Image 1 (spheres, rainbow, N blue to C red):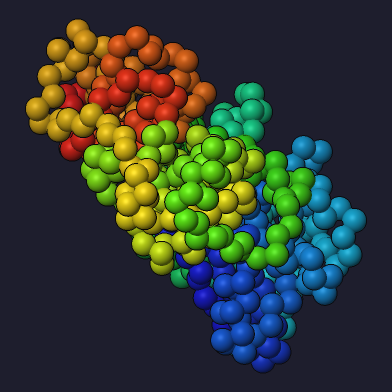
Image 2: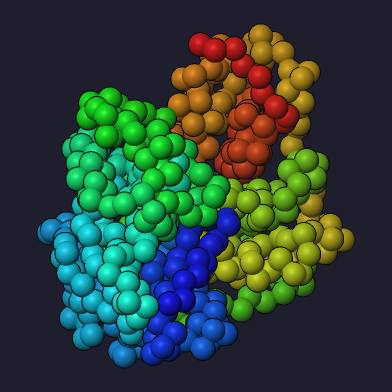
Length: 467
């Protein structure tokens, strides 16, 4: 048996390549849209991807199952447990497709997979028990749990309500998740390996661990959400629904496209390196995304109206997915040419395909494009009382962080909700924008300035007294 985790550190997502070395066949579980890297990994290990499976309809990226399905020889294994609203629509008439129900099994070579319906995070969610029959094993060695059970956490049950708009869904989903955790995990031994779909940094949970995999026994001993589920239903429901981070708006689009069908693309697009003149012309029809990582450098000098989205962080896709739509034309300003491939690939993973071109910050500076400067203030020298006299303090942390502690009279608008809630702010006076360290505030400040607000960006560690 061959097992390899393929981890995207920016979306904190894990796919799994699971192969039978005897037959040379392999399955890819929960692939992202850029499927070239999975094919490359399989080829490097003398495997051929013959099957694709998904744990559920994903919200944080476009699934690669749709891309793989263009090959009619690929066997597709998807959940058939979604009911009228959350059954997959796009492959309904595709040949070589199996809609799995609870308990059903299939094989890839001598590797056996058993679908376990594990609802709560989503209604259709499946987990997969994996048994290496080729080695003579009778018991499963791993449980691919998707967004059901993580390292240190469990899946969040609120996304159908908070992203897909299913009003009143989160509490019943939390109770269903608790039922799944109690009933489905009980039969298994502590040694069972847990293969989760996400790690630390994902918006699909609030306390995910940074360790890539775990065991069921370890989670029984240390996972506070799992322990809460096993101990008390009402306490678990209260705990799991409190403090969840506000998801980026693009999650709703991902849910819809992964259910109904995403656009087919011929791989990650090649995006042109533009000269300054061509960049300016294209920018007149689109939005400039400045992907430099250094927020202080961005604040000191950037293109007017540019969105700050630091490439080498989870904020890159979160910022673009919160403030732009998948139909917007995007122009990229990059630190160096080598960043172009990653910048385009990350946007491709969330369905942002209309990228007109890029240039480097040095080229933009030489061409006279970096003419705007945002007023920046270190939090250590910030006078909150004076700020309240001059304007408004805007806190762009999560609502849970705000409720825990905040500055007096500060307005709470999480940075991912700024586009939909910006009308609550005034353009008649300055906005003092802060988060906990300056990272999220830098992203929000760039959006607010582009929308015509007067912004004073607060940078540095923010120390607040408990409310």
